[in-house]
Length: 248
Image 1 (cartoon, helix red, strand yellow):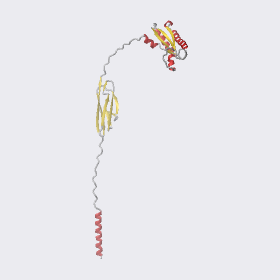
Image 2 (cartoon, helix red, strand yellow):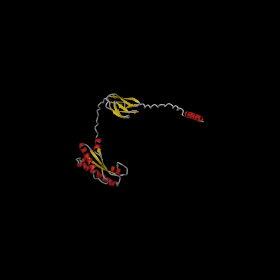
Image 3 (tube, rainbow, N blue to C red):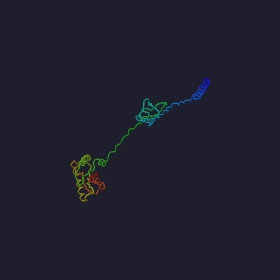
Image 4 (cartoon, rainbow, N blue to C red):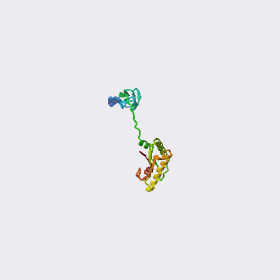
């Protein structure tokens, strides 16, 4: 009886070992790991240009550059921004050199600026044509203007008449007609009288400044010779005037 139990025990142990061996088979082999190479740095690019490419000595040109993927850029040995521009004024023809460096390598770019001597200038002789009496008169003797319904000289008119008197004293052969004018408002008769008063105000100021009376004539046109024909204050102001004419 004991032998039978012993055999049964051995058979159980054997079966158990077979099950353990069957269930614990060797680990399956793992697939090989593929190593991904690190990304390659992008190549460095660089351009350099000059505008203009030809100048005269003493003039300037503008150097402009652009780079990509660079972290160290020099122009003629001087460190500069990766993109930019600057002025240059070379005394002789020069080839400018740009060097751009980065993880992806080194790139160079050049720009040629041609410098020429300034063109020789020939002195020009300016011939001045003397001004005519009419031109001198137009510059020195200018119209004067009056306030509405007034023949009283303004401070600006007095200054212009003083200038006119000085010009007349320098040209003793000049004779002048003073024409009094008015704006369109008021009757014809009234404006003829007001124009005469305005002409005589200028004549009196000139004689007081030393111009002899025989060189001065007066006439009133009233509102018959307007300088401006619109009906507004700006236009009326232009017509309230004394106009001076050089008599030949």
